[in-house]
Amino acid sequence: MNKIILALRGSTLSVTAFISLFSFTHQPAYPQTISPTPGFWDKVFKPARDPEPPIKPRKGGSRPGQTLCLISPDAPSQTRVIWNTKPLFIWKNGEAQRGEGVQKVEEVKKIAVGILDSQVDSQGYSKTQIVTGRQSISYQGEPLEPGQTYKWLIFLNQESTSPAMLVPFQIMEAPQRNRVTLELKLLEKLHKNQSAGAETIALAKAKYFADKGLWSDALQQAYSVANPSSELSQIIKDLPNQLCKLKGIGKSS
Image (tube, rainbow, N blue to C red):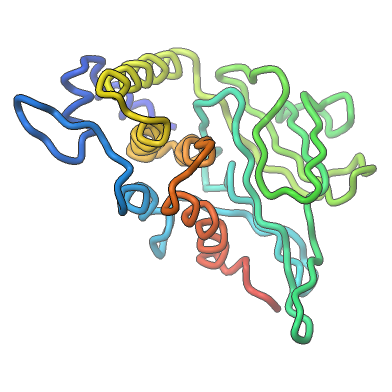
């Protein structure tokens, strides 16, 4: 959290600073914006595939073959801070190798969001969402409150009232969040003024978040593109597997 605040304090709100901070190439008279040409998405998320990735998925299940992997929000040593008040939840359902086929043995059926220090019961949930057959979903309730710490609750049965797992996360404090919001608006305006498309803008925002260690928000930008390029589509497909395997989670028993 302290690192994020220091990074935010060190940033500037001028468009000139945005040009120097976020452009991959620089021309003094004609500054260039980020372009979704091959390799740029890969460059943004390369740290996430390093031997010690900044994203720390959490393993679910204790019996052999159960390999549910919770990716975002993840579970680092400190509670993950998120800018977006409607965060994206990403996980990888468990699989086990049996004979020549693959059989799912642990699958998320329902998720919920609640305030961290509330009792874990139906009254403590801000929003419950059925997610059977999915492995990512955006929060669909009322916007979460800046500065508040929440819990992401995971259920392996739609009828269950007892979560199998939970992951804490915090929405960024209002002063820092407002500053990030303003910087993102300026960044988006800069790119729109140069006729950038939706994926170019999402790429610029993803790099902005990644540079500040806001990985949940970086991932959300990648997943937000309605018609992703082939490179982005491949990253969205491969990254969950790569992250879970780095943590020794996504392998069959």
